[in-house]
Image 1 (cartoon, helix red, strand yellow):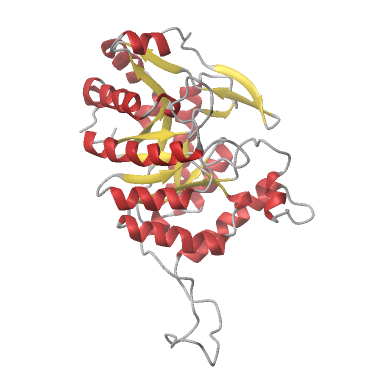
Image 2 (cartoon, rainbow, N blue to C red):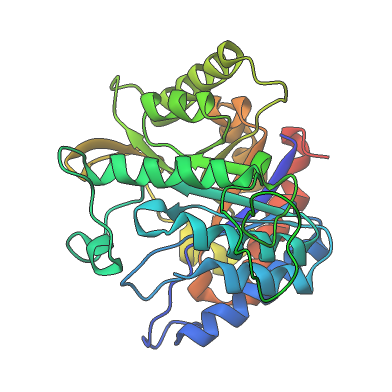
Amino acid sequence: MKRIGFLSFGHWSASSGSATRSARDVLLQSIDLAVAAEQLGADGAYFRVHHFAQQLASPFPLLAAVGARTKRIEIGTGVIDMRYENPFYMIENAGAADLISGGRLQLGISRGSPEQVIDGWRHFGYAPPEGKSDADMGRRHAEVFLQLLQGEGFAKPNPRPMFPNPPGLLRLEPHSPGLRERIWWGSASNATAVWAARMGMNLQSSTLKADETGEPFHVQQAKQIRAYREAWRDAGHSRAPRVSVSRSIFALMDERDRAYFGRGDGTDQIGIIDNMRAVFGRTYAAEPDRLIDELRADEAIAEADTLLLTVPNQLGVDYNVHVIEAILEHVAPALGWR
């Protein structure tokens, strides 16, 4: 395991038990948690993106703010729903945020997850072409985004511009060299993982995936990663790909941890999501020694190079620092980290 980061879902709620009672609370606490995680030695700060929900939605202002407050930690998303995105405008936002961070963005994108509203992308002005699905549309937006990231000129300049132009066709600015290699695809199935490999994207595999074999979640996810790596080799890409998996992992260090997380059954769950039978990975919650043994048996963690710890952001920055620190200090070294 080369890298360990956190993944925040960015919830807020006015309920009495929530430390994030407003969108402002979530945004400011997300920045503070990223700063604290960097000080602890964590490798990444990642954030979910959801529309029409009391969760983090517009990622680039947050990513830019985290980039300005930190110096080393990777900053990413898991994932941006490309059905909602204008790839051209997204290029400008992503380029600016990456330059502010000094080239630390790790952008997870995908066709998206179940929504709070029906066909929410239509409210953003998008609709799939006739005969195509919204998933097709999301992948097409991703393809355009990847092409634009190459930084090649495509727009004919005005012969009487307001400011002098460089020679040739113009590209979108600001351009951030290297960002193209730091794009990840969030995949729930083996087929889309293979597609991501062919497109030259890194792979993000979350805490759920399509139940394609009936095997335990971590076994299916490990097979997905192997299929991705095989497709990457077959595509002949020159660089090595990266693969992340997300897990809910809690080291039970004190009575507070046991009260929050010590009563789970620790088993996979089966459900239906977007008309797809899905398997949801278990939550790991135990004392450190037992936790190490359980995580060593997780085949997908062994296959990946990056582990993202899902954090309970509504419990506040201080508690989440405790959660991350407990894993980094008492569990991660035994898994080969550092």
